[in-house]
Length: 482
Image: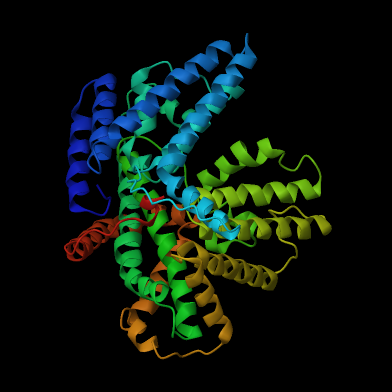
């Protein structure tokens, strides 16, 4: 059930009416849980059983860890290790089985072997990457004493299944969500309208920007041979817009749905393309994943506590594994490794100047502009590996850009997928929405009388635009495949 589909619109309207009509807190929680299960099962019903088994395992494991943490820490640690291993094994089987098998075949062939193995057709459970990380974080947090174990099965189930964040995040920690389940939520008109604002912005990003440029991006990355450097660069820039509007649009819609139900989910984006360096970028892009990688991978590896060389190594390992988390392809590993190198270089340069990585190296607007432009282009060029279906495609795109032959024989066909007027409109709209990622800008807008007066018109235009565009079929979100 896609957020940008009419089916979800009807589903969410029913959930809103049913939720706010129920008289007691417990019945509301039960209703939300049932709705969340229906939302998940609508995609592929049989995998709801896998999801429920995962919830039960982690619920029981956390209780067992909590009971032993103080008196039998070694036993508690063994339970954590076993639980994390089971979670990762499930993720590894469904997402990486064929990848590891084919990698093994390639290695065997490289050493003169003749081993071969057929690919197994495994359907990836929806949202498994996100809900696996969320449950691992929960069990580890209980072991560390950062959060109490959830003893109410209803609350544990809703924490795991809450549909606004179930499929593609944000990755929610239990201490962020469980306290919100402590008492009955009361309807707040301002909160509800803020939720509608987020939903409208998210749908605008997804349906009216990301989905409109996707045919051009698909054309560039499916057949880059013969395209000039100008078209290839435009494809890279356009994909940078697409993935930001698609993914942040999903998060906006999810957070908006939660607000309408009286709950709050953490922000996942803060105008990432305005970052001065890569360290700042990863504090603004997919924030909950960045925090997860920091807290459950980078710091346990040693973080920055064992000298510079080990710090750079830990950054590389963390980002390479973070890339692999995105998908079973060496392209994702390369993408993550590039960011690992970039983060290590950023840290090295800042340390040599005695400046924290979160601070600008030099004062002045010129430096800030240049640094932002350089950072954006590093991120955009790294997206080439993220988007390309194979390494050969990524290599072709990079070689084409480096050739500096701005026009190629296939350019006219590619541009047929994306009129120049749409390019200009898309970049302008995406840039405006990107600036809204600033909390100060957004707060100022929401306080203005003009926004209050124009809100109904904005909702109407977004709704009409969606009806016109979704009539041809809702486009899947990019991060649904991860």
